[in-house]
Length: 90
Image 1 (tube, rainbow, N blue to C red):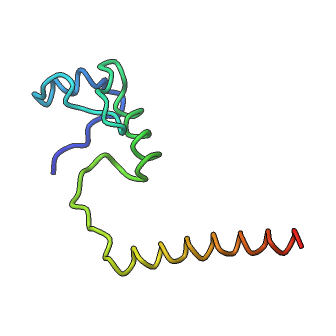
Image 2 (cartoon, one colour):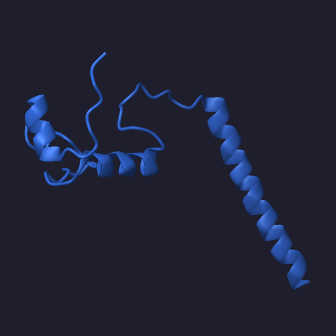
């Protein structure tokens, strides 16, 4: 099993170490990570945004039945809000 890469390594040095092109390591928003940013900082940003490490996995699409149920719930919530405002205005 390979060793875990230390979190205090800078992105530029990590790209050199792994033989990657400059700019290959990205921020969570897709922009190029600065070469002087530490890997630990990048990991924290990924955890905050994605609640996990920066590992790409196969994403499972939402089944159509679940998507419709959330749409219905949103419509019901909007209907509840509009009826409650009507009662107050009477």
